Length: 200
Image 1: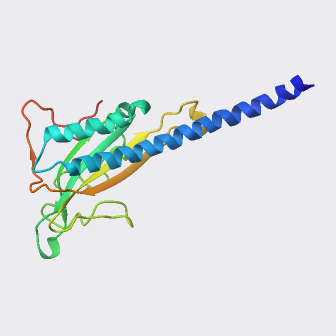
Image 2 (image 1 turned 60 degrees about the horizontal axis):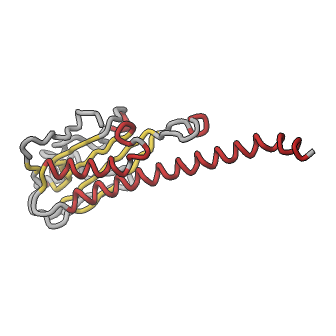
Image 3 (image 1 turned 120 degrees about the horizontal axis):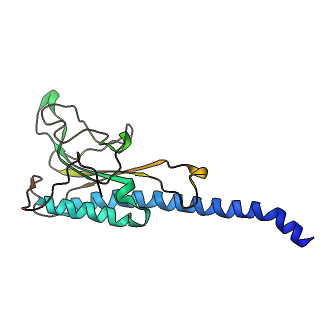
């Protein structure tokens, strides 16, 4: 009788265990996406004195390293934007994306820069702030910020039947500290992480 009862309950127990594992994996993936966004923005904002293509590449590599266990390089995308006041007056005053760099192989509409490309807002007020409506942020007239957008196609640990493969997204921003110039300097021999390039 005990074996019979065990046979009846085993499928239910297995489903609950597998569901619990998938829920845990999903929550961990969501946490890592948040960590990648916050760490990438913070690290780029911490670079002092000046910032180069090498510095940005190191920041992007660091973000992918955080997501190694969930295959982030192949299934995710990081967009880093350097945002500051455009220096214009009157109705043209606003923010501009001075430079923008990306990494990751995820190439879908959701992984594209959501608030504009490099150069947006340089000559008009088309970029008042970064972020979704109700959660927008902008630096002051005398500061700059790094804004990170991270997207990731969820990789199930058990099966896609439970959650599918949803797109996880997180954004983060940090004010630049102790960097008098936001111009991105070239680094000889360094490959620029253009947002038109997709790969690991």
